[in-house]
Image 1 (cartoon, one colour):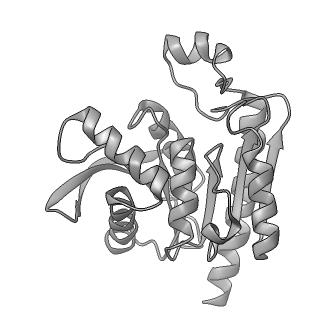
Image 2 (image 1 turned 30 degrees about the vertical axis):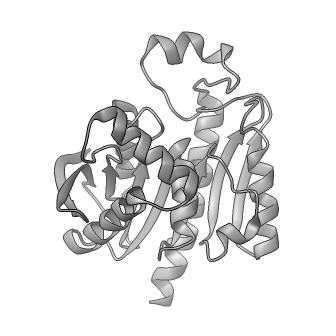
Image 3 (image 1 turned 90 degrees about the horizontal axis):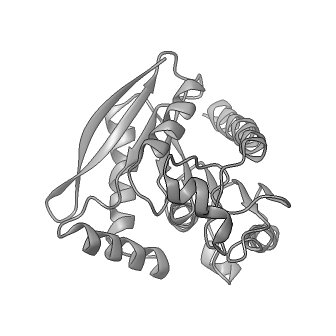
Length: 245
């Protein structure tokens, strides 16, 4: 079981960002927490489900709403996607505010990050510029140059090869991390597409995903394999940091 609380986190510009804090009954012994970043569909029950899975494994988890910005909803989406492509902007300030809040308001002493689709790219880019212990990006767009990710922490993630847009980005990320000498476990699944860990309960996602170039569709086997890799990798990195003090 876990406890879910809606919280509001101060960010630059004088606006509070909505987020969910999902707290486990028994926190992990490594004093580690996770920030889970939503996909392009935003702050949905699916990202809460993912946060609850992390909490069930003992990780206090914060789920920020990156679309919770000033202006109309369409404009907020546009601003977020612009930051997503440029690698800088207000959305990154929001992630930094989330990280600091998690450290200040809970017993967490070290932070990991997990992101999906749009959130996967945000997670990678943010982890290259912030003191994150470990990052788990899934099927996000990977920068073309390795130097863009210089400074990134250990990485565990996954991509689906039938995704006609991002399917080869996992292999690109592997090459970048090898060149940078960064510990990693990045896997490309041959028979799945984009969003294979997301399970949105909508007609468009469930019935039409196969017809898009992304081949977006939830896949239980690939999802569970990815979860197990993430949990093992997170525990190894966090345990090592805990032992080092």
